[in-house]
Length: 251
Image 1: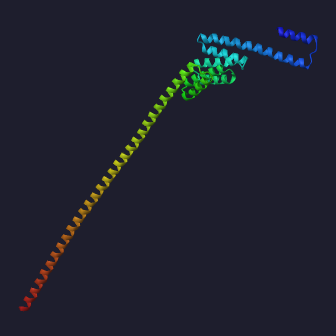
Image 2 (image 1 turned 120 degrees about the vertical axis):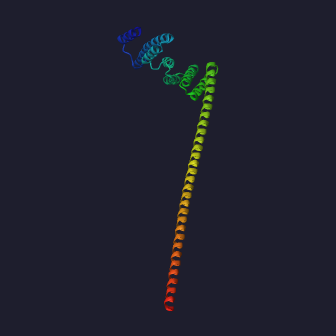
Image 3 (image 1 turned 60 degrees about the vertical axis):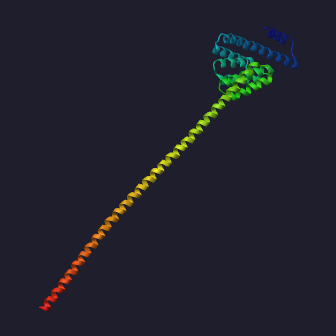
C-alpha cells in the first residue's frame, strides 16, 4: 500500500521521463513479486504445519497452492515431493525432486534433492537408478552420512537381486534342459515303440508268409500225390488193357 501511494504521488506531481518509467516499472514488478512471494510462503507454512501432523495429502494441496502463487518456489517443489513421498507416490515424488535439483544453485540443496530422489527411486524398486542418485548426492555433499548408508544398502540390495536373478536364470535353464531331455527321451521311447511295432509287423508278415508257404507246399504235395496217383491208375489201366488184348489174341 505504501508503495502504491508513493507511485501515485510521483505521477501526480511530475511527468517522469523514459528512464524513470523503466525504474518505476521494475519497482512495480518487484512489488508484485513480493506480494506473490508472501502468498506462497503463507501456503508453505500452512503445508509444513499439516505435514508435521501427518496430514500429507492436505500438506500437498497447500504446497501446490504455494506453487500456484509462485511456480518458481524451489521450496514448494521440494516440499511437494516430500508430501508425495509420504503418500507412497514415489514416481511423482521423484519428479518433484528432479525439478527441485534443476531449480537450485546451492550445492547442499542440490545434494538434498538428489538424496531424496535416490530414496524415491529405491522405494520404487529402481535400485540401480537410486545408486546413481546417491553417488551424485555424495559428490556434492561427501559428509552426508545418511546418503552413504543408503548407498551401501542399495548396493547390497542390488547384489542380492542380481544373485536371485542369476539363480532364477539357472533354474530356468536347468528346467529347459530337463524338458529337452524329457522330450528326447520321449521321442526315443516313441521311436523304440515304433521300431518294436514295425518288428512285430514284420514278424507277423513273415509268419503269414511262412504259413502261406506251408499251405502252398502242402497243396503242391497233395497235388503231386494226386497226380502220381492218377498216373499210377492210368498205368494200371494201360497194363490191364494190354493184358486184355493179349488174352484176346491168344484165345
